[in-house]
Amino acid sequence: MTQATPIDEHPLMRPGGFERLKGKVAIITGADSGMARATARLFAREGAKVVCVDVWESGTPRIDQLITQEGGEAVFILGDASDRETWKRAVTTALNQLGGLHIVFSHAGVGARGKLHELSDEDWNRVVNLNLNGIRYAAQATIPHFLAQGEGNIIITASTHGAFGVPESAAYCATKAALINLTREMALDYGPEIRVNCICPGPIDTPGLSGWPPQPSRGDAPGGRETNDARRVAQVRGLHRQGRPEEIAYAVLFLACSESSFITGHPLIIDGGQTISTGAPPREWKD
Image (cartoon, rainbow, N blue to C red; front, top):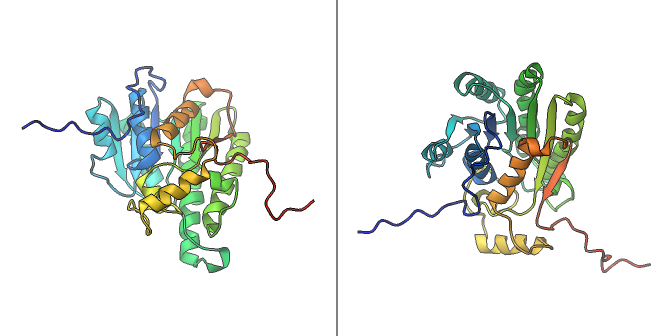
């Protein structure tokens, strides 16, 4: 019987070989799914050793196993990015097992549906703890090392929804907007030794984001994936499609490598045109 050829989950990803990250070690959170999974795989193809942190294991295969199969080097840590001890373990693993630490991609995040007055303390605190305290703990664990060695690179996942509001997403919008300005503030505090940037993805075709707001579970949202995908495509005014995880990964790679050496404090919007103004006033507007 002829064995079926496995379908590549990242068909837009090139083989690598430019070694843009040769000799670098990176920590990536949320690394076993979606955009961060594609980024970890791409970093490894470009020569980096990767500490892959996630709160769950995909088993499809797990990201460190996928990287190893392709000839790269990676270690997996099962842990929560909103937990200070997870960050300590990640840094210790990077330094002791992989020989250094140069790049942090803080990607893990979560959302909660609700207007501000409707959100429970549990939902609000869950979003704030992961989206904001996660980067705080990342900074506390990694910045002393970066300052001591005289270089470091931090990349944070914000969102286009941190640049404009969307209904019933108070906690998500608030924390993602905070991350954009925190990126600017950190760039001022820690330059020139450390560059700090963030990415602001628009609608990206990942299982975990097929519903809104983003949830830690990887299942499709109630209402069906097709309905959610169509709604998200309608938001993209320029390219009229959702993005691919690989397209985000290449943007993160650019910020992580020396080719972006004069960029810091920047929120890089990667949205296919979602945030482009139409230039037309709303229908109810009157002169």
